[in-house]
Length: 473
Image 1 (cartoon, rainbow, N blue to C red):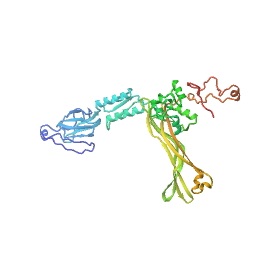
Image 2: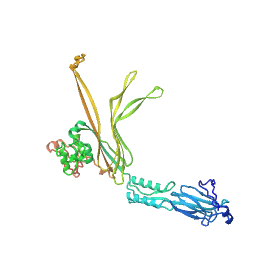
Image 3: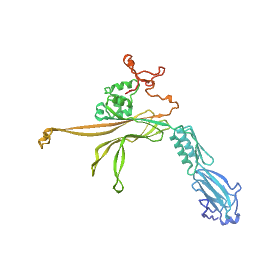
Image 4: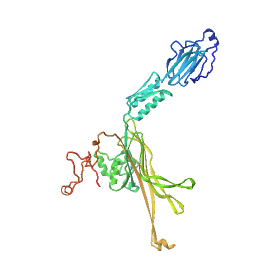
């Protein structure tokens, strides 16, 4: 028996056409017109990667497949065909006779592979047991349950979309808790590099250990700091031994109170997980720019202290933080001088210290970025008037002094998971229920503060080794 194949154009479908009937078959069996016994719109379900032999109620001359990426059809005999499930989705298969009548019409639904669906359920269940993955009869996939974070919701949706393939349907019915907000506390301080060497502050050890044991010795091995008994900051180590470890914040506060470091900025920003937030304190300086017809326009460039960060709350409650702090200042070094009719125009340069990093840490944990150093050398000449200008002999009446300054920028970042409150009375400031003392209280009763309401506590007092409070200027 000879089976011929030809492709016929069809306006409603783009697919392949297979001729299933030969000369011998046409002489033994009459051509069928109309629909098959089970109806013109029969449904056929196949799993992805599987196949099914379909028996027709007549001889089919042409077979059309709407989407070959979902279903592939091959001729088995003049009145049968083999249907392969190529990819998850839904398509239409139509078989026609020589006269153009419809022999069979199928709506074929290719379900996702049970192996791949089981793998997706296992992966999603390991990340969040409260999320369920279900498959529908039409090849769609539904996601139900409660997601722990927006990140896990996106991962489950991406996996389900890849499973159903192009054209498949994914129903995301999982609920995600209210948007998680992250508060970022940043301290940007600058200290003399010579002071760092004298005091022995090793910021790498502070990052690794998080306690004051790393203060007082400069070493590349953080464990060596723990075995050092003599330290310039033994009083901090005693606080740590009392059961309350001294953090990086404590070290900076101690140095700042003694005037050993200079605090540049302490920004506090809050944003939703996955959204960027930025902060800048400084100014803008003008830059002349040439434009059309030799006109001069002015553009402004920002300088100062800026901070940009993007937090992402992970499923286990940890925070993936992309932070980009920058400190810039105007400088005459590298400045450009332009000549003009009214004189010279000097455009200042910028000295920039910038860090761009991504870290992962828990709420309330801190990390320090150090090593952003800056060197400056100044030369000052002194000499007697007139005598210092005498050639050759003038050098005897002049003296020069060099001064080298090295500073190091330290950036401490601490993220917190925060949520808004419904009751405004739950928020307190440090000076709630506090009033400045009068002369009688201050001089005769030796009181440094008084309480407005006797029944309320002072919110400035906390559970610490000693009284906690604030400074009033």
